[in-house]
Image (tube, rainbow, N blue to C red; front, side):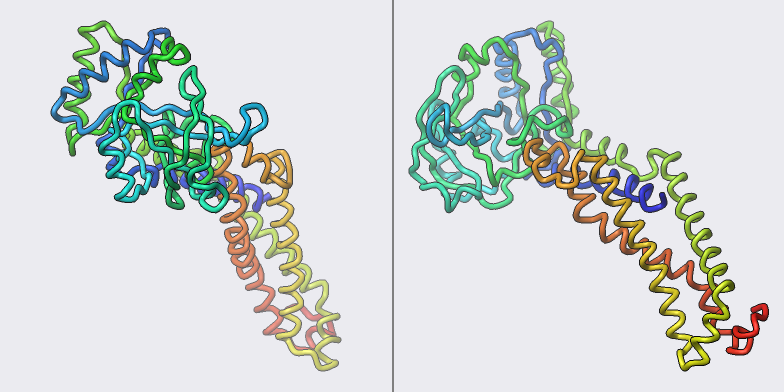
Length: 390
């Protein structure tokens, strides 16, 4: 139970922090100076968002604003080809995400016309796909033929569509773009005016000058109030700070306290068990010592017995938890099919938790063996053989 509760508390904490770390690395700018406009009335069409975006472009304290949407590239036939998750991003906002673009790519982006685009595949496809391989792109209500212009560097990232810590959108929604693609376009306006998107309203992503986010927010809210548009301005930095607060290891105080108490009780119980075992086995220890076995050897026997019990308990707790978290003992397929949704928990439980359990086993074993070691060191062979009190 002690290992189970430790796993429960630590996996949640590390999993939440892992998600935060990954999100922070998705930015190449200060998140406190960037955010997005969320339109509360989702029944409005794209013309409302375009009006707000045009106003924002006129504000001197906004460095960049624009749109990005998720779509798919198809390698091969539409019906049977391999689908690659992709983001179509306005060229004006590419510096918000951590795309790790080479200077030659940036030079091409700077001169893009509104209807021109650059297709960059994830690093995973660098050796598998020819640079000039023809693929098909879902572009609004059209399917267009495109060619890859290059590949992203390993670990290139882009921010999550909608809120940073929302649910995953599926297998292609990952923290990194290694097995995804990015299409940088001069302007998304034409695609957003298409039949597929025109009846939906898109959030506006933007980046302000240093320290000007609150001023910009006031300007945008005043404009939208006058136009009768209901919006919410989300600051990416605030989202990250709130997630740090939510992921505090003692946030669920009852669970944390219960875990500490259970671990302490486990140490006490194991210590008492060791003491009782030593008392009951003292004659056996006396016989062992009379035949030439040293006290150190007997201590190692006690240690080995405790280690076997603790390791089996730790492995059992770890296996129970992985089954509870993912519904299977082999969660790789679950992770691949759900994108970032379980990634933090998976990393915490698979990569970090075994080391923490090993440390906990060592600490519990050392503490619980202190008194038995003292008893064995102080007892003589005669005391053991005659069954005298130690």
